[in-house]
Every structure is written in structure tokens, then in C-alpha cells.
Amino acid sequence: MTDARFEDGREAPLNLGAVDVEDLKIMSSLTQDAVFPATEMRWDRAARRFALLLNRFRWEEGTARAASPERVQSVLAFDTVTAVASSGIDRRDKDTILSVLTMEFIASEAPSGHIVITLAGDGAIRLEVEAIEATLKDVTKPYVAPSRTTPSHPE
Image 1 (tube, rainbow, N blue to C red):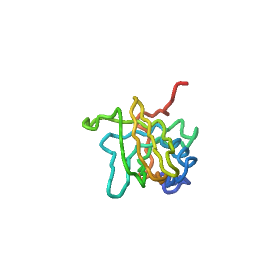
Image 2 (image 1 turned 60 degrees about the horizontal axis):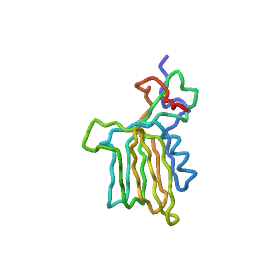
Image 3 (image 1 turned 90 degrees about the horizontal axis):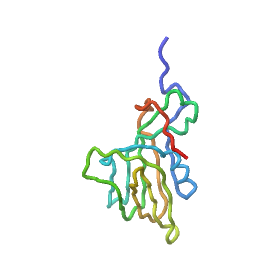
Image 4 (image 1 turned 45 degrees about the vertical axis):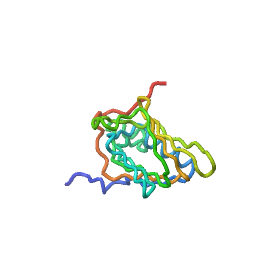
């Protein structure tokens, strides 16, 4: 008898796209409480792409994972980005760990606007975009969350 393998289960890595506000809300809920080092942010100005390598909490597993909460590394990428700004982030501190709270779209002249990624501790990243074009893709197998707890938010 052998141990079960990830490939044997029904679980599949996420590979989602967002092209409107409703899609972005779903993506926001799946990236809530994702953590990443400040060094894992990249903006390719020529390609007009901004990306983050996240350690995402697997909210899609719901209460089924309460006894063994999991995280997975994911790439969150945005295309059609024309400018990037941030506040409350010290990019010089290589040990800074950031945590995603929410993502929202603020329209300017349709379909363009700003995607604001709000971070814990009063930080934020603002992306000026021509349109919402985002992807969220899991790039590793899930692993037991190092804290062994499910994130919680006081009401």
C-alpha cells in the first residue's frame, strides 16, 4: 500500500482569469490573506505586466481544511498596466512580508481605471490599467500552512 498523492485527488490547481469587476471580486476573495515578500513584486513596463508571487491561503477548500489549513504558491498577474504606485511599503527592506486584504477596481474612463490592492498595515499597490485583465495561477502543490491556523478577521 502506498500513500495518497496530490495527483490522485480531485483537487486541481487554480488557473483563473478576470476581465470584469465581478471576476476581480472572486479573485480578491481567493487572494485574501495571501502573503509575499516585498521582493516578489515585478513590473515589466515594456510588457505592461505587473505580477506578484503569493503564498495564497486555499480559501476554496472551505471548512474541509480546518484541521489542516493549506497554502499554495500562486502567480497573480495583471496585464495592460500603464503605471504602478505604492504606499506604506519599504521596498528596500528585503525581509518585509506583505499580506493581501482586498483588491478592487476603481473605474475612470471605461474600460480603464485603477486596481487597488490593499495590504495589511496600511500598505497599498495601485495599478493604472487600460482594462481589467488579470490571472491567478497556482504554481506549486499545496502545503500545510506553517502557522497551522486559518486566518481570521475580527468584526
